[in-house]
Image (cartoon, rainbow, N blue to C red; front, side, top):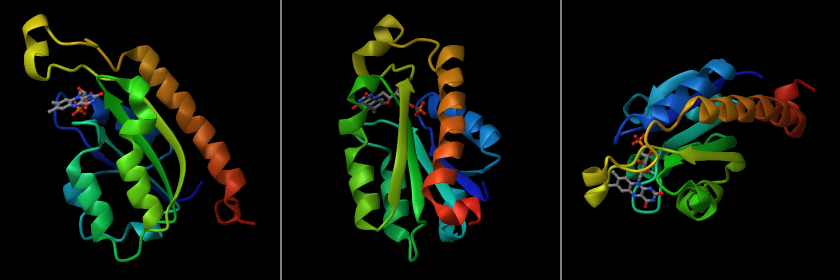
Length: 162
Ligand SMILES: Cc1cc2nc3c(=O)[nH]c(=O)nc-3n(C[C@H](O)[C@H](O)[C@H](O)COP(=O)(O)O)c2cc1C
């Protein structure tokens, strides 16, 4: 594995930052906020992870704007999120996935887990998914990152140095 960057927007409770830290550690990656990533060329990285909470059925708008702003998109990307309703991952990742594919990126894998959610009237009850991501979620994230390392090495000859 060569150079990896993780870009994360985590605005509600910092839930997604917890995943981003695990990925950064496991993949020996540079961890960036969207502000830090803006104006930088991510095409130099061999793998870029993009993640946020899910807000109104999609990733955070700042990530979509970041993808729009790229002159030269990175080649290989993975997506992650935390959500009140993580079983909707495929649908809720669709907007960013589609945008990335239009820009010519390969989206190699996706991860989503439960995140503490106190949106709207939920705060009255303390929210749903309290204490998530928890240690089991983070362990699953670690395993995902390990698989990603292997998959990225196998599926992209450039990464394996062949
Ligand atoms: C304004 C708002 C809208 C949300 N919309 C959704 C949604 O459409 N689907 C969903 O599964 N979760 C939704 N959530 C829950 C968040 O995705 C969840 O709490 C996530 O873990 C927040 O991540 P963060 O703390 O990293 O910002 C919403 C939360 C907020 C604050």
